Length: 286
Image 1: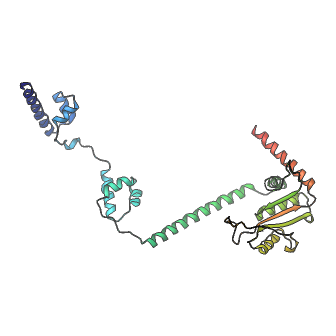
Image 2 (image 1 turned 45 degrees about the horizontal axis):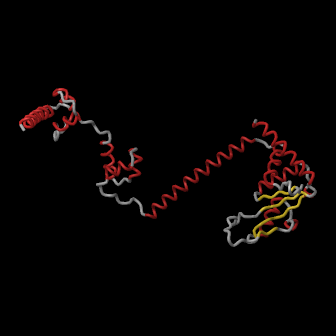
Image 3 (image 1 turned 90 degrees about the horizontal axis):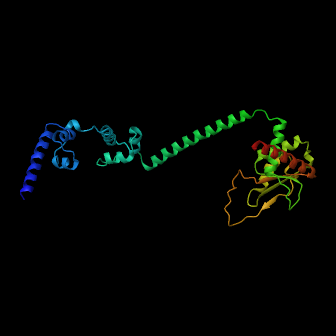
């Protein structure tokens, strides 16, 4: 018992010294060195309840941000606006201003939707302008189209989109189908370059039965510069009630089939040309 009382008196005496030093403005490190106490747990017990002197407090870098965030919130700013202005996280802003009253909405729901739609329209216009700039620049890069350019483009175009003979079904015919008028014009220009007379060409429309068939026939006849009556019989695609058609509207004209009569030899030449292109490309990859 005497040992415990002595130990307690020693602790209380040491605590009095530590508190006295703390109140003179010494730091924990200074007190530790002065009293030769190198156990942090004991030092914490000796200084329990004693606040640190002001000079030892580290300034909080966020104090100014917090004050500014509260000021802006009182002015009616939203979390998003404060975040952009101060560059801090929304979680910090919420912690700093959650005791403040929520500002009244600056806009009605209708006004807010209108602002969003206007902003989206500006964004889309800017994107459209950028796409147009890129496309114009690419067109200028290509320069004037030479006969060889058209020849190579036509071979690749046919091999990608035209009918091809198969080992299990030999059909050496030149049959080309596409829904893009510009692609059809390129194909016709290629045939002209090859010396294929227009009299050898047959044209046929392929379109969904529920579409404007007569309008499509007039459209494609204008593209290839013939009378609509000169078109071969239109192929109608039957409607499947289980599917939802996306190829609808005034811009839907179906596809045009261009067939070269007596085209077996031309088909063989096309296949040979393509084989040469493919072999040359493969050699570049080695």
